[in-house]
Image 1 (spheres, rainbow over the protein chains, first blue to last red):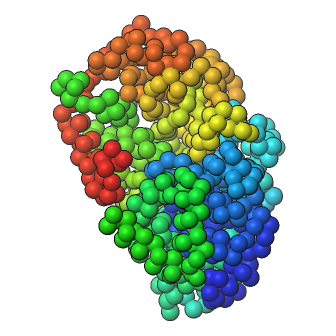
Image 2 (spheres, chains in turn purple, cyan; image 1 turned 45 degrees about the vertical axis):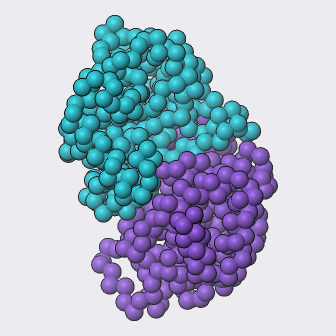
Image 3 (cartoon, rainbow over the protein chains, first blue to last red; image 1 turned 120 degrees about the horizontal axis):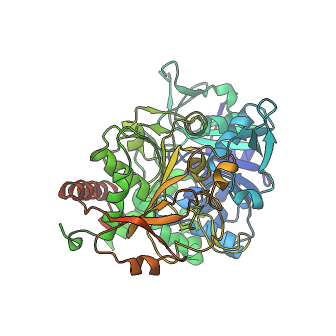
Length: 288
Length: 262
């Protein structure tokens, strides 16, 4: 049953060193506030899963939280590389990062399989791709009815899934809309789940087929306005494209990254303080 | 219109856009494919259906999305479904006519690498990876690839095959049991390449105005061949150029960046 608690309590109570953790959100509704809190609480040795690692995992990898990454596309969308991710893979900095590399179709299917309590996903894919040579988890299975050979991969069953959503009501029923990615599947596939939301409302006013996660499928709900910035929350605020571009230069250099992380994440108490510090940095950048 | 009135990048985008027929259901990659597909939609193919892997079906974005999941894709789509549904019902379900992809590296059989330069376990350059491309390239009925041509992108041997074209050529793709027909064309800033019947090796079928055969060979890492019926690509029309430049301008204003970044 969903409990309304602070984000720092939710992370402290649900995320443990060594956990398999998925923070999902396909460009939209990326749970940045939760990622920062995981960095602040210095969680270590996490096995991270996410289709598109994006800036949030770049930050968590650079901060030393992760020992493994399962992913399908690791770039800075519309900008270029994720430099912290690349530094970890190419130079083992700040430590080695094991990769389990898959395709979008695979991970999407694997979350569905996880939510459906199945051990593996089955789909048509990977034929001829070298990914099969470097990921021994990508296997094949023969259809018992037609004989067709299909790809089979393990389902994703995170210890904890964290997502960001637009609204939740008093009982912790969660409503999200717009680009939904794999969030619903990721929550239902996980042992525990945390949802940060823009707003706490009396009534969701959700139409019958809306994407609602009933409160009893969620462990913790946390009110974190703007908790998905610099990604966006449909109906609330836009994507901060300028920050995505700026991240390229912040993250390219280890020292610049470390200084940024210290000032904006480690030295701030929570996400609202981060937002104040980051808007001050933006103001100074604009003035210089 | 003269070659100095437009850039080779504009020629590439416009000739790629022309390949998308009106009414086609197109699974669109971000970046160059998205620019070309939207240009097609705004010119000769108003009824093209653009599908993005984040979930929008029938997206009609007023400006180019910076990411694959920008809000304007959802707002202008006929419907927005979940990412698993996109891959399961719509792509694997066989409803996509054209997969429109980019590439970091490509070989003579139009196999694509977007994973690593160098050795996989100790890469010289770690690229973003597969995304949706392995299944788009195999499940879409056909594939269009748009990529800038250089000796670094057009290589004799790929460091890694992320997504398949025609594998080792001939009927190797069909024999592997891959459902779609594979790449119909590769569109570059220099020319258009198409698979030769039967062998399925890419040969130049159309050369953009002002580009020499020598330059195409110089920018290709294998011995390139030209079709016996090799043509010259039609220059961009005034209206194609105007629509493309307006689109890029609107995009730059919307994203608050220089036009070259849009």
